[in-house]
Length: 273
Image 1 (tube, rainbow, N blue to C red):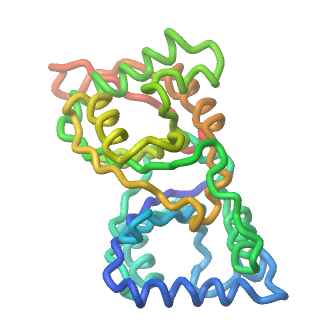
Image 2 (image 1 turned 90 degrees about the vertical axis):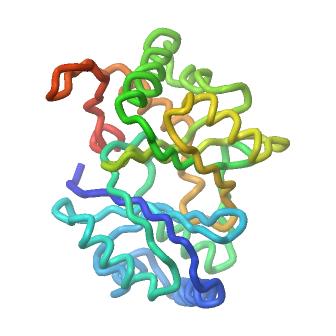
């Protein structure tokens, strides 16, 4: 796999009218009859960087994106780029991705292909594995507790109860599945969870709070997959395959102070491609 660094962005839309007009301008550009993937990728505003996924929330207040940058890119350098790119229409909260489960099918060419098709009236399929897709941003309150409980418990469940990748989805509450997990360098984790019709935000909030046992503050957002780009390439199957590798390579390590044993893993983005 070619080297790269991944960043996740939460765009908090500050100027809704300006944001919508800016987004519409991209659809106009990519809607040209002679547009190709290579032409789209070479558009100067990208500055050679690769966007892999874009999804707005249902209420339109936030849009989230996953980007792939050159391996030496710092968080500050990416922040400067994304602020230029968004032209001041959003406040851009940036997170550096340390590990990822479920991104193996996300690439720039697929993103551009979906963007062009959508711009030219061939609507994207959206998320295909379930009716609803939710993003939960876990703001970790107790890092050691999270690693010892949430990470270790999840890995143990997978190792002890799952014999095939498809079994991994059974570790979640009934009706809930997962298609993407991003571990950040900060005390944050983002998960994309899917449910069928009938589930409400309160249902998802309750499930996430019970799963994390008070070790994180969980912000839940319903995603508007019909307006996303490259969403159809997210997959519960891909997440499950990566989750088995993640769980099977979990190891015990001891922090520098040697007072508490915690669980860490060595499954990075490279293992999820």
